[in-house]
Length: 332
Image (tube, rainbow, N blue to C red; front, side, top):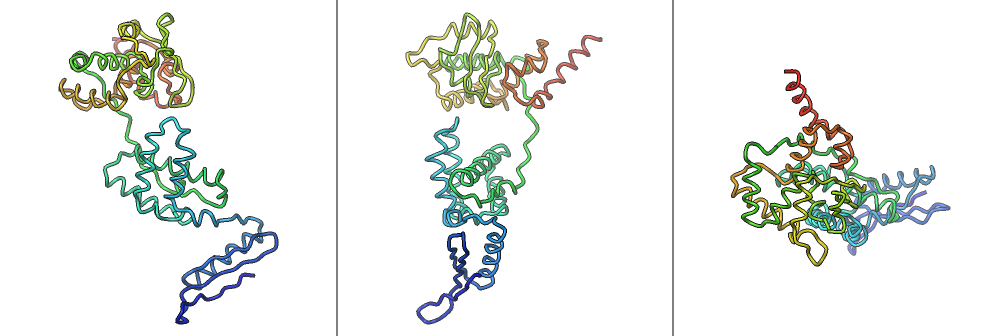
């Protein structure tokens, strides 16, 4: 049975209550509370778990702050991720929040809900907030499965995630493609090449910018992507136009296809949009443009998915209206 003793200061004033639980087969448990009711409630829970054989040691999760856990996560887990820079940035943002000073075991769903409201007030998009929550969820799961904190619950599972907006359907219209490419060429011919490859192949920005020449086969007209967003290898066919873009490019000694960094390319792309007077056209919209063109060429969803790497066929449903429009033209 638990023993609860008052803790007093030098003047004999009670400042808390210490609980001690000793039970055969379990390590001694000791914890101090400010009031006796909390001490009794904790003792009841721990003894009941020991009685059922369901007790798990909470000491580490009750003495490790989120900030400390994030630091360990950065050291052990983030280097193994595909986007360590992005993960590190999100980690630092979590560490700057008040919740980082809380112990892992004390973090509840309402604490994360408050953090989500703060992020929304800061103007973060729904997808960005979901990525932040995904990082934290993975941290709690790692702590539970690999760091010996088996009793830890994952509070992220209790939080309502922000709803994602409907998929964008922005496409190049009128002479926007010509204006965009002209603006890109005026800044740097390599930028025009990158934009053309995006329009012709439907590859993601990260896939394009990470290309090396050993992955480009101009004889077979293919690009092999070993590491993709969905974790699977993908071979992307090249149109005649895309293959010619690669043939016209100079070869870099480091083996990389582009001299641009991802950040530098994105900054230059945004400047080119401004010079071309084109509004609301993200680089990712070029992937939507390319995917739409594949459907317009008559490819079926399975064929398109093999090229674009869409793992969930539901994501391609918003392109099927293009096929219906083609049918309308056919039946007259």
